[in-house]
Image (cartoon, rainbow, N blue to C red):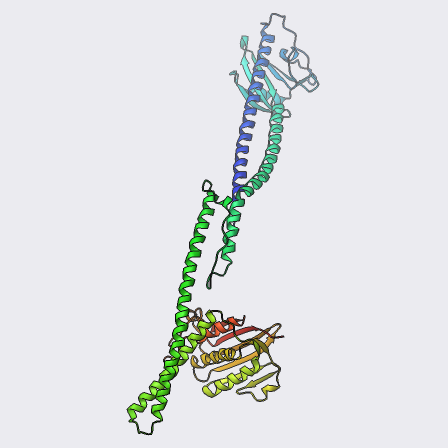
Length: 500
C-alpha cells in the first residue's frame, strides 16, 4: 500500500511521541520502584534496629518477655511486641539454639510462621544487607539479618506487595494517560499536517489541471498558475509553487513556438500542394497530347510517356492526400449530410473485388450476410451518419486497399456494418499475417509504410498517408478508430456518431 505524505508525517509524529511517552513511562515507573524500594529497605533496617534494641535492652527499658503466639503455643520474638511494628512485619530471633519467628497480620495481631516460612526467613545471610525473599503463603519480602550480642541473629522483613501495587497502579494510570495523549496527538497532528499541506495540495491541483489539458496539438494556452500565496520563496512549498509556475511558463512558450512552427509547415504543405496540382495536370495533359499525336513515336519514347503519365498520377494522388491532410489539420469543416454506410460498404467491396480478385471478400450487413459482391443489399436496413460522403468513401477505400496490398493472395477480408446504440460501427477484418507491434503503434502516423513481410506490391506506389488520412477523416467526424492485430487476425474498427 502506498502511503501519502500526510499519512507518513502523522505516523512519524505519533510514532516519535509514542516512543518518548514509553521511555518516560518506563523511566518513571523504574524510578518510582527504586524510590519505594529504597524507602522500604530503610524501614526494614529501622525494624532491625528496633529488634536489636529490644533484644539487648539498649533502649534503656527492661526487656519485655517473649509474647505467646497462637498456633503452636511458642513465644514470638521480642521485637513484635514493641511499638512501631507495621502490618505484615516478620521478625525472627535465633539465640542459644532457640528460634522465635512471627509476623503481624492485617488485624495487628501476632501470628506464628510455618516451618517453611521460618526456614526461608532464617536462610537469609546475616550480613546486614537487605535481600528479597519469597515466603510461602505470604509473598515477596525485603529481609535483613544482623548479628546482635552473644551471637544472636535478628531477622526483620517487610512485604513488597504494597509498593508493587503502587507501582502497578502508577504504570496503569501512566499507560492510560499516554494512550489518551497519543490519540489526541494523532488527531492534532492529522489536522495540523493537513493544514500545512494545503498549499502543496493546491499546487498539485494546478499541475493536474494543466496535465488534463490537450497539449499534443493545436494552439495551447496554459492559463492555470499556482496562486501567489503558494509561491513564497521562504517556504519549501512556496519554492515548489514558484518552480511550477516557471516551468509552466517555459512549457507554454515552447508549445506556442511549436504551434507556430507547425502552422508554418502546414501552410507550406498546403501552398506547395495547391501549387503543384497545376503543373502536374499540365505535365499529364502534355503527355496525353503527345501520345495522341498522329506521328508514330518510337517504342522508347512511348515507354517514357507511359512512365511520365504513371508518375504524374502517383504524384497527383500524393499531392491531393497532402492537401487533404493540411486542410484537416487546419480544422476546416467537412460537409455534413446523411451518408449511408451500407451503400458505401457495398460500393467499396465491389471495387476491392475488382481490384483484388485473388482475395476473398465478405460483406456482412444488418439483417443480411453475403459473400463476395452482395446482391440485393439494397433491401437491408440503412446505417446512416452525418458526414462527408467523399471523405467517408476514401476511408473505406483506404482500409480495403491496405488489406489488399499488405496481405497475401487468398486472404479473407470481411467488411461489416452495424449500429450499436447511438454509434455506427464499421469493421474491416482480415486473416492475414497481422501487423507487428512496432508498426502497429505508429500505424496512423504519416508516411508509415508496411515492412517487407507485409508489403507485397505497394513498395513503389504507397505514399504512407492512407491510414493517416483515415485517422484524420474519422477524427473530423468525431469518431474513433481502433486496431487489434495478431498473426492470423487483424481488425480495424471505426465508430462514428449515428444519425437519428
